Length: 171
Image (cartoon, rainbow, N blue to C red; front, side):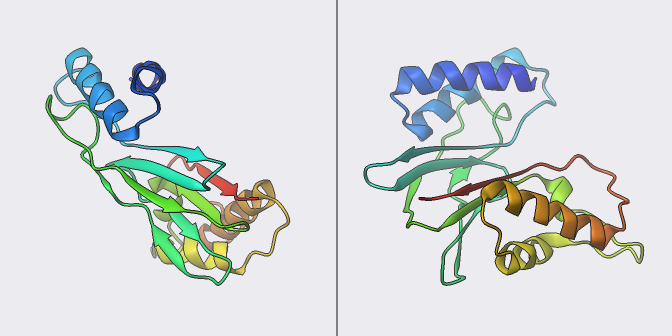
C-alpha cells in the first residue's frame, strides 16, 4: 500500500504543480479506488520554497510535525484532513508556515511517541519535545541520533513498534 501512496503522490505532486491540498485530494482518490475497504494511510506532505522560506503543507491524519524555533517555541503542523483512502471525496486544508534560519522541522511516527518505559509509562509527545529542545546538536542527523538515544534510554531498549524521525534544519 505504501508504494501505491508514494507513486500516487509523486504523480499528483507533479500534476498539481506542487500544491499540497490538490495533490492530496488526488492521492486520496487513487488510494481509495485501489485499496481494500479497511485500508488507509496517514501522511504529511510539505513543499518548501527556499526563496520565501515558506513551508506549504497538508497533514493527512499523521502525527503533527513540529517546528521548533530558535527561542524554543513550538508550532504544530496540524492542518489537513483525514488519512488517505478512507473516503472517496475527502478534502484537505492546506496551511503555510514561514521558517527562520535555525528552525527545526521534526516529523515522527507513532512508534516514537508510544515508546514505553519498563514501568509502563509512555514517552509521548512531551518526551520527544524535551529531547528536541535540550539537544544542541550541530546537524539534523545528530539531532535524530540524539532523539533515538533519549527514546532508547527511556524505554530501556524495549521498543516494540517501528519508529521513524525526520529532522530538517533551516539554513
